Amino acid sequence: MGKYIVRRLLQMIPVIIGATFLIYAMVFAMPGDPTAGKCGERPCPPAYIAEFNEKYNLNDPLPVQYGKYMAKVAQGDLGENQYGIPVSEDLKDRFTVTAQLGLMALVIEGVIGILAGVLAGLRKGGFLDNLVLVSTLFVISVPIFVTGFTLQYILGLNLGVVPALVGAEYTFYSLLLPGFVLGSLSMAYIARLMRSNIGENFKSDYVRTAKAKGLKQGRIIGVHTLRNSMIPVITFMGYDFGALLGGAIVTEGIFNIHGVGGYIFEGIHNRDGMAVVGAVTALVIIYLIVNLIVDLLYGVLDPRISHD
Image (tube, rainbow, N blue to C red):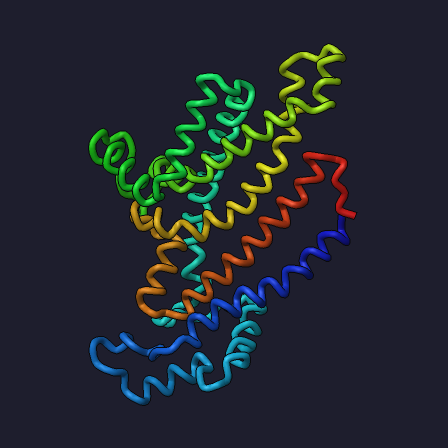
């Protein structure tokens, strides 16, 4: 297990370098003036441009710029945004709300998606199965921003059962609706994935053996069928957590949540390259760590899977 973790950590290094180099190059090597808009409607004075280029090493070749940036990242320094505030400080508070939103979406999509998939898989061809298939197809077909605005209008503005906007002073209750919206698409995929896995595993030899041994239906489903069916779902949810963190831009925008998604959006809008690169770098590292944890969970779910 220890060797496996070390090997995976070493494998993360080229992935981090490749992913961060791409985003760094997209931000700092694209055509255009990186100081545009930073001095109002007028062009920035030469002294400011020279200081800006010197601060962000823009006079160096791109690989050298990137190398200097990564040297700072290795020491925990994600640079400073255009207001001189360390990106890591900016992200500290914003990651808290985005992580809570992502975890809430993950729990909602996991609980509802798995439950719907199990019920549909055990009653294939029945009313419940058709209901799950049609409703999940509807959710998958509707863009996330349409789902968000519709639920915000109905549940938040018309019925008033949940807050329509979150703002800076958020609570667990105020994040429920955004969490549901953020996890709705994945919830539909999980339900369909779980339905297929349950259906296939329920016809497997080991399930027939369990039935022949006279085991109770609940034990056959809960211990034998569900356990093996969970592996692809756990994999999906692990990969999805990183996507939820990065893809929260739309949801955070709809519900006015001051999280990482909004921070990246503001950074792109204000051409604040260091803020964008720093936030994306942090997301890449978190995404890889989450996937390592997911891979380690395989051995817990299925002892036949060895990491040695």
